[in-house]
Image (cartoon, rainbow, N blue to C red; front, side, top):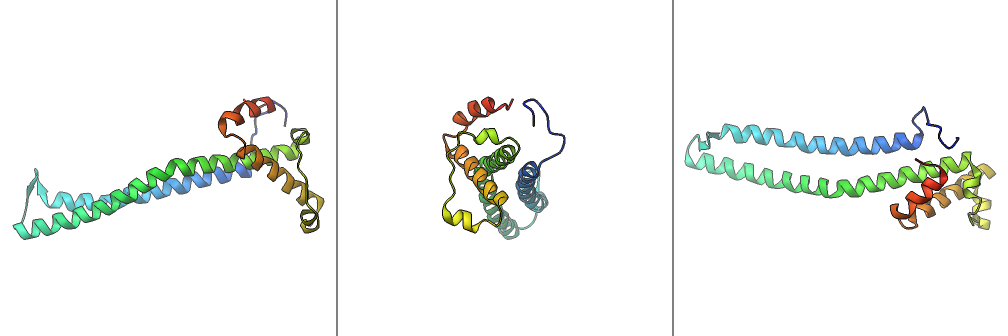
Length: 162
């Protein structure tokens, strides 16, 4: 791929990245849907914030609604706290996939890499292609593990990323 060529197809890496975000979106959707019956039940127990029904019925309904709300609120809090962590993980996995794929197309990217295969790696690989892929993935993982975005961005720009 040339320095400024824009890919026209979604790569396998991009497809995995998008699928992971879609899964998180489904989780958020499930949590959102879980609130709807609770909202309906709440509406049926109030009319302009005045309870309808006997005191015991209203109290029992209120307690049940509050217990469900507490559970759903905890689930929402968990999902939103982990959303950022999952997004970073997805981005790192995507970058690793992309770097390994790009290194397969442009071997010069790994020209200065000091990747080495152990005897076990060589014997365990079913082909030189598989061995090369393992080395590219190891190189990509090392790239990601080295300093985070602050170090990645200048190196990616140097590689030709815009």
